[in-house]
Amino acid sequence: MVFIQDTPESTATTFLGQANDLLISLWRDYPRLVLGPSLKLYYLSQTAFWVQQIFVINIEERRKDHWQMFTHHIVTVSLLVFSYGYRQMRAGNAVLVLMDVVDLIFPVCLTQREIILTLLTQANSSRRC
Image (tube, rainbow, N blue to C red; front, side, top):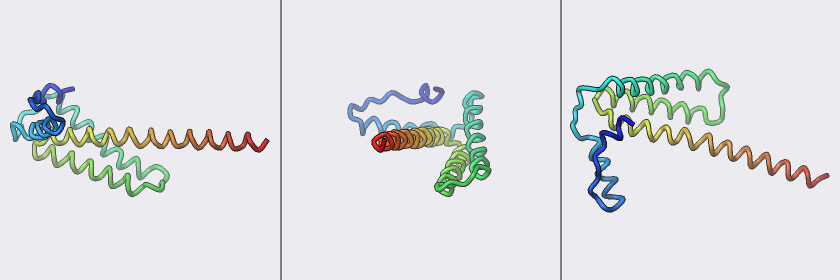
């Protein structure tokens, strides 16, 4: 919500023009030396969450996609730390949004797959009776 207030309104009429305006706005007012307390709390707590996920993925039982998820978390934390260090908080927020969307889509797809497999298994077992 904090970044929505900071994003300028686009004057472009096409989707590509609006996307271009949004990308350009990521680097407006660089470097941003003063960061509000709510934005700092949000950014650092999200970074702490992703660091914690690196530990969690190593504590859990290893899955087939362990190294992909481990790499995903390392890359995300690196992008967040470097964007914070270089005062690129808008770009870091874009990383957070992208990674949060991915972390939402993957579990939903896996859950949907499990439900479909369960239903197919139940339908197949009921035919045998």
